[in-house]
Length: 262
Image (cartoon, rainbow, N blue to C red):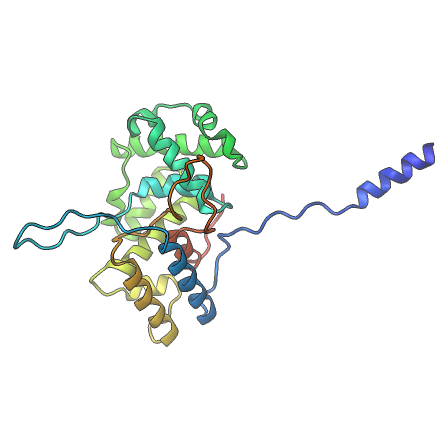
């Protein structure tokens, strides 16, 4: 019996461990093939994400412009969706929006309370993510006297980096995501020269494939006025919508240079 037990133990040790699922956010080099892949996926997900509804302009008034994306929402999204399909971040953000009166109430909520709200989503390292969110929100509030990151759009690269240094609770991968989104917004929506933004993303302005990619992306996103973080409608079952692995924002962010993880 002893020999049999030893033999069984050795066999179990030799069995390979289950491989971790592939990270849908793995960076992509901006090759012609990858640019075409991103455009194809972008067209698919945008078909399920309607543009914002805008009020009809009064006679003689210009057409209203869609509002820019909420950068705090983007921060929450990447904290809860990092390493996962975007449906997890979308559902986490929806529950937080519904579960708290406003961001001030959310700011003073303990990490374990947010963990309880999201527990059934089975997000890996959920408490650590909730703790990182709580600490980041607290430091943003202390720095800005409010939970708002809109000022980053008007800040230069140096001022943004100085802010991130003042808010060390904002983990490097979240700061990098925000920086990438701001670069992508400039690329997609700015009326000024986007040469520097293209260079930050490694897109050659003389490359025909890169220019074709940019023209198509700008046309697709123009009705939105922002980089959507959702992948489609919220599910009535309160589960992550996994129809598409990545949102438009995160699809494009794959083309940005990878930063530090932690």
